[in-house]
Length: 323
Image (cartoon, rainbow, N blue to C red):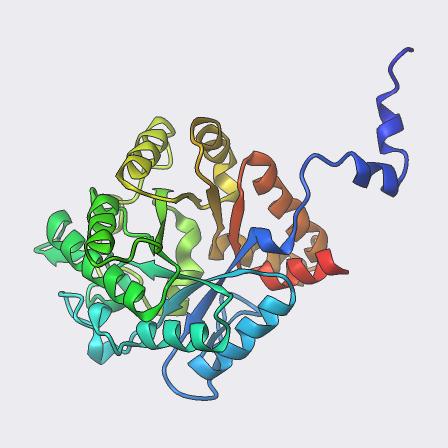
């Protein structure tokens, strides 16, 4: 033999020295669920170890995340049922829960990068990401509300808005709205390749945002398709997206790799609630080692091309990395 490949696997030190992909806490975006009230911490049964918190508890959590080296959080709010409608009224309320949460976090820890979910499903009486007419989710009327929603987040201090709705043309409309109001430093992280997936179930439990009728297949992507993901992503970049996202992550590593090879902007992956719940459930039954499964899964996303990873394991993974 003239090549002994195992030499580079001989010891932990050598394996670390030649590792091609290395996770670090700043790779992670930590999703946070926020509810009204004070001193509230509600467990989410389908997401063991994850919580909905009031703003005061969220600020404490944000400070812990920052201390671990996590630089970004992605905010989701649970809207009260009495505030939901088919117009997105509460979504654009300057004193709404999302807007107050942004201000509170930025006041408490200005350095933390605050990203905000932009979609109507938490605010919709129908549980859909857009305005409903009959049983059709209408595109252009939805985009008009999303632009105003994004502006309200920017005005509250958001560093990035993250449209997750998959309406056509919303990235350009949001960029134009931000520019028109001189929010030239507010970024857009577009959910560019967001698939209609069964892996979102626990998230919808967390925010009570499951669709009241039908499904989301007329706006989220068909999981049989990959070329469509390229088209959607390139269009979002042309329209002004600063970061593009693939969602879900684990079942879509091939999409991540394809997109990473085609674009020059950062690529984000969303390690979604169902993927989190699967690892948790298997670990609880003793079928796999949770810590090893988490690190292997997250590394697979980075290997596939993810520059950033939104994951409910962000805090746990950061602790493992930090030792």
